[in-house]
Length: 187
Image 1: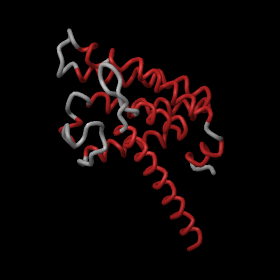
Image 2 (image 1 turned 90 degrees about the vertical axis):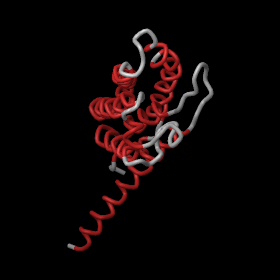
Image 3 (image 1 turned 180 degrees about the horizontal axis):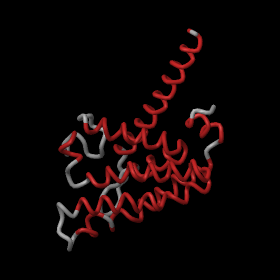
Image 4 (image 1 turned 30 degrees about the vertical axis):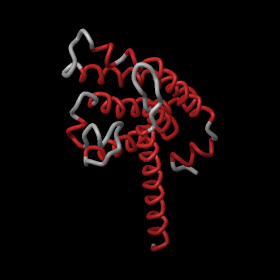
């Protein structure tokens, strides 16, 4: 009995460690800034899609959910934090819709990866990006006039984000099967 309990605790600890690594990757990707015209970009989209593509629905959504919870709790995990605010104030600011979009994109990509395998699951990544933009731009419309909405919330980021989708898809497909199995808890 105690051996089974110890094994169960080890599995739980390992799963939490994997989630912590994923949250760390997403946080690091929010802090990595690539100078791009007209605005700097982060690597969050690539990291979120990669985590969901490798880990599937459960792992992807739990990882992004904990990332968002850490940000809501006031940890400086988001792009521009703490300089641009922290916690719920940041989350309910202009980028709040994009943050919600991250969770939805992780769910969509993770579901597709579980349902169709990593290769075909990557076809959901552009749809995930579309969800991020739909929720992000809709929320941003509360802060920016409709005349400037696409110029501020979509156009400057689209090319770079499409490149990040391609990178996440490539890394997901090229990842060794052993890594994907380990992330999903099967190895």
